[in-house]
Length: 126
Image 1 (tube, helix red, strand yellow):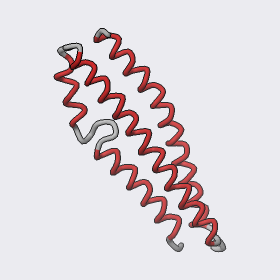
Image 2: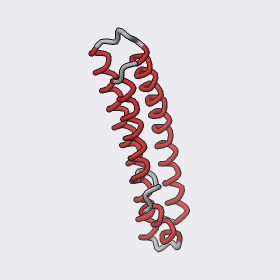
Image 3: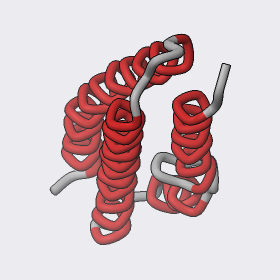
């Protein structure tokens, strides 16, 4: 494979991964709506809180997994670039090791913060 083909395959992978992420954002928004409805309802029962919490946890897991797929796409591309001896591999390896990268520490922390925020809204009293 050439360097151009590797980058092209990486971008194609990112396109489909970004569509999954858009779906996750919509599901996160729905989780906030459900949590807000429970928070504003004085007669919300325990089952609604449990199912909303389970929904939010599952969406957080899906979002985390989507980010890890993006990280794997990037890592595979960098490895392939290094295998073909592309000069861009030296620069691209910096993205893989950065905590701000796709699937990195900062994105994982963001997913955890969103989940904790949703659960706090769901289980707190007005």
